[in-house]
Image (cartoon, rainbow, N blue to C red):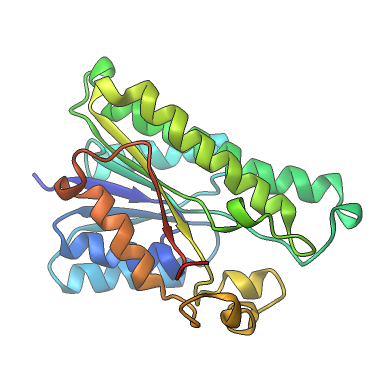
Length: 248
């Protein structure tokens, strides 16, 4: 039976690139999306065209009921989970802290932090040998912003990704004896649509000069790191966060 991976936010950008690569490496792939069903179904279509198994599920990771329904659907249609990629997340428009509303902060933390925690919780309940599972892998998507702080842009986003780094370290130690590896990937400036959703579609390219390698990265380059961490080749790696940021 193929291993099964759930990739949240898998319809576009890094999530879509990861879904396609994971399928090519033998995973059955479930991917979640919030509103763009067409993009998610196109990823499913591409995987199936190459002979793989895939499922798209509508779910907002900031809503616990929708997360629980998503995991149940994966259980029912694909089988017991082998891996989770906590990729779904949001940014907001460029702002200083003294311009941020509580509503903005609560949305940021609900989706990026609480959503990742709840998805990881449900994955552990299925994968941990303590719960009768066969083990598995969790990869959390952080950001170089967790190290850099993103002043004058979105320190709330940076702080949410700092929380993801801590989740990776703590959960890795918590479930290490239960057959689960937990690692993180910290992308740098990557050419994806997330910058447009924050009102700065050219942000990555405008800041490329700050990267030691003097270029932005691609979604595929992030997917390569994620899928390596999912693979048996990373069998002795847990609690680690890999910077994929061109040296930034």
